[in-house]
Amino acid sequence: FIQNRDSSISKKIKSWQNIQFKLIGKINLEGYVGFANLPNQVYRKSVKRGFEFTLMVVGESGLGKSTLINSLFLTDLYSPEYPGPSHRIKKTVQVEQSKVLIKEGGVQLLLTIVDTPGFGDAVDNSNCWQPVIDHIDSKFEDYLNAESRVNRRQMPDSRVHCCLYFIAPSGHGLKPLDIEFMKRLHEKVNIIPLIAKADTLTPEECQQFKKQIMREIQEHKIKIYEFPETDDEEESKLVKKIKDRLPLAVVGSNTIIEVNGKRVRGRQYPWGVAEVENGEHCDFTILRNMLIRTHMQDLKDVTNNVHYENYRSRKLAAVTYNGVDNNKNKGQLTKTLEKNKKKKIF
Image (cartoon, rainbow, N blue to C red):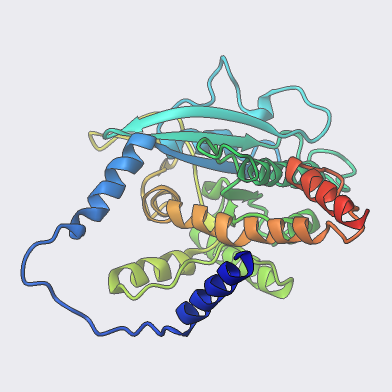
């Protein structure tokens, strides 16, 4: 009886495999069915759940990282009570996280800022990128472990979605540390290079500096964030405009100054005011629009579909047939795979 049942099941499976599904064509409905309302359902569900975004800022002390973050999100994430990383005493490269819940128009965003105080400040900066790599890998590992749990309803996404790398406005191209850091991390995170304190350069110097940086990035085959291709003409123009301005030259300020009867964020100089949100003075508005308004979801998608998948593939491939994991940090999923393989061997 059991053999007959198995044979009948196998016949049914084969018959299903032989069935070919054909697309009969595109049909325009005459009446209203309702599935056109699906995007609204997704929108309501997403707004109710809220959004998460993790932004890493890396660069030497004194390049205006904390000021730029405050300017980007119009919030005092760093204040005299909780100063930025450059104003704290540190001895080695550390990785610190700051979380803030921002609400705008009924949408809430859990923003996580990852600081790297002490980066590039030592006399010997050998392997100063290692704590940053370890942090990114540990967040991938946490997410991989969360995926392997029985209950996967709550899976907080603490993976680093974007890394803003601040380049000192020296006018002499990239430093060896800049090149080495980006080469070590370009396959783990979306890197967006920024020229910090761009108001210290003249417009001509800034343009020349940008060309030199992009030339060096191409020479060393560094992969910075690739903007997605689109068929929309307006979006294509926007992406082209951003690409032409890379690396973005930014200015940050927490000071409100009145210019011609208008209150703006800027920096006061004897010869005038450098306005943060003036496109003729710097690329701050381009960065904010790209990072928050137009490409935030794409940064998250690239992190999930490219960088995380690469890490996941390497992690699972590292579990060899004899159950030995070549990686240092063993997560719950790795340990489970090892146990299962040992059972098969013995």
